Image (cartoon, rainbow, N blue to C red):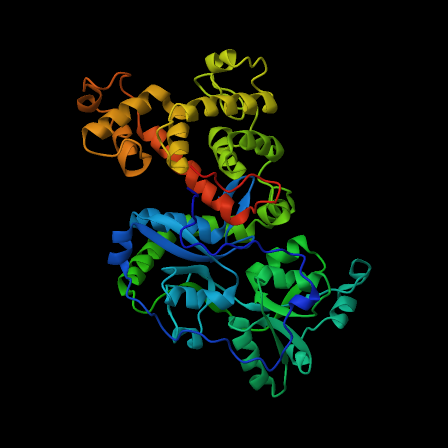
Length: 492
C-alpha cells in the first residue's frame, strides 16, 4: 500500500513566479467564504482523536526544513503545545492566508498556527488566542538601484516615507489579509484612493515580498518583524515606513471550541512565565544573521529541494530498496544527523551507524566513507526486509525492518510471538507488535518462555521508528519528488 498524508494539503511554492501569475483586478470582490464553523469539534473530540491538527503556511519563520530538521517559530511552539496536551501534532499546510479561515471552519484543522493580526472583521469568523507578540505593519518597497552609493537623505527622497504618497499608487496584498483591511481604513484616514491589487495563487507573504525584490510589483505590506527578516537577506528592501500602529498577533481557533481556547491560553501563559516563549521568538526574529545563514543555505527547503549533501547517494541506495528516498533520508538523519564522522558510545560509525561486526560481515573497510557506509546499510536493510516475507503491507514491513535495524531481528520475533499470544495481529507493527516490543524491558514480559532473545529496552526502537516516520511526513510535505526519483512508496 502507499503511505497517505493525513489531511494534508500538499504544496510546493516556487519563488520564481511570473508576473502573469499575479491576478490584477482592483475591482475583484471577496472570495466566497464560510462565516462560521460547520462542525462541532472541541478539546474532548480532539483528545479522543489523539491529534492536534494545526493549519500552517510554509515560510522561513513559520515552518520549513533546514539540514533535514523541521524548524520554525510556530512549529516549535506547536510541538510544545501538542506535548502539553498529550497529543500527536498533525500539520495541514495552506497555500496562503486566503485559505486558513475556511480550512479552520470546515474542520480540516483545529488551530491556525500563523501570525494573525487581531481585527474586528476576523473576530466575526474565528476566535483568537491570547496574543503572542505585537508588531506593526510596514510598507515593503525597493531602494534605488545605486542605493549603496547614496546618502540616507537621498535614498529617502526616492522612497515613500509618508503613507499619503500612496494615494493613486498601487499596493499588492492578499484579499483576506489584515493588510487589505488596513489599506481600506488608510484610504478613509487619508481621504484619497489607494489602488489595492489583490494577490491570488500560491503566494505566501514572503513570495509577495520577493516580487518586490524582483521588480514585478512596487509595494506590498508585511508585519515589521517578518519584513525586517526579509530585508536582512534582501538588503535592497526598505521596510522602515510604518502603515499602522502596534497590533496584536495571535493564533486562531473556531468560535465553538471554548475548551481548546482555554487550554491554549493556559499554555501560552505558562510559556511566558518560564521564558521559553521569549527564547523561541528571539531565535527566529532577533537572530537575523542566523536566519540569513539558514535562508542562504542550499539545504534550506525552499531553495533547492535538498535535504543533505548526501541526497544523491541516498537516492541511489533507496532506489535499490524500492523505498522513497526521503524515508531513507529520515533514517540517516535519525542515525547520524548526516554526519559521516559520527561514532556512538557502542562503536557504531558513519552515516548509518554501522556496528563493527556488521561492517566486517559486509566487507566494509572504510565505515566513515559515506558511500561505503550507505551501501552496507542498504544491504543490511534489504536483508532484514527479506526476513519478514509474510507482511504484505509495505509500510508495516518497513517499520519492522527499521525496528530490527535498531534493536536486532530476534527481538522483533519475540515481540511478534507476544502479540500473537495476546490475540493481536503479529504482522502489524502499529498498535500490535510495537505495543509488546515496548514492554520487553519488563521482567514479567521477557521472562515468558516464548521470549527467546532476552530483554530489550523496547521503547527505544519504537521511538526510533516513530521519529523517522514523523520526520518523513515533513520531508514529504516540503521536499517534492522529481520525475527521476523513486515512487512515494512501493506497492506491497
